[in-house]
Image (cartoon, rainbow, N blue to C red; front, top):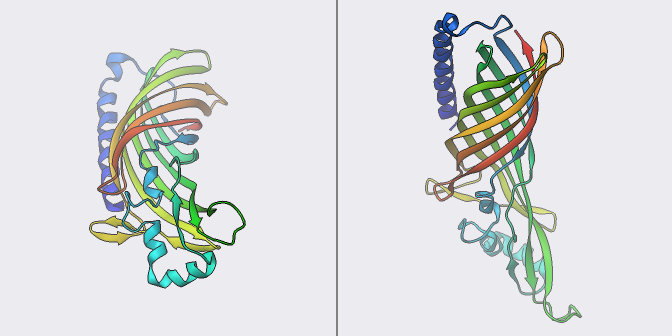
Length: 277
């Protein structure tokens, strides 16, 4: 997967370089910006992921054959669970709403402006998504002194890494003395990798495996493509430093397994600091 992402990144970088060459040929035709052409910087975003694939972490029988009942029934685990629950037990309820948590996205931004109102950019962004929910166990204890069974909640955890590469164009439709407003459009290539998925009962971790290429795997994942649009407001901080506040809306493919190949909208809102080169 990583080799595929590297090859894709080089391909997009080549396209980016070709765009620069063509833009240089158009200098005299459209006018030349007498300021710096190259900018490099870092951004930090609040990332709001699409939740379509979050259910994969729920441990339900419908998403993986190595589900929570499978863990409970494993011969090497049964005695441990029998000693802990001390009565007949079963899963009563899975997570009611499978959702990722809003997370922080960090990245590198490269901008080339051949014209005053036009720029080409390349983004490298990484984020770790967290899934933190609960499932409920029903324990049929006749000595619990309450009407009905005992209900116990236990955590179910998931962690997922996302790498996003965006290659696109910015148009600066407003220019003030020391500020600018822009809109953007871009293509997206992403790599998704599950880092962990497990439940915790009596302070013991039990991993949830997933089917990948007909074999059990703890770290499924894949590559996807998409496209997006954005907008932002840019302003000068010093003679060599500027910043912008930006919003991006990306429609992208998210590949975790063959069964979970979803498309959806991802949102990010952040700030970026750039240095003139």
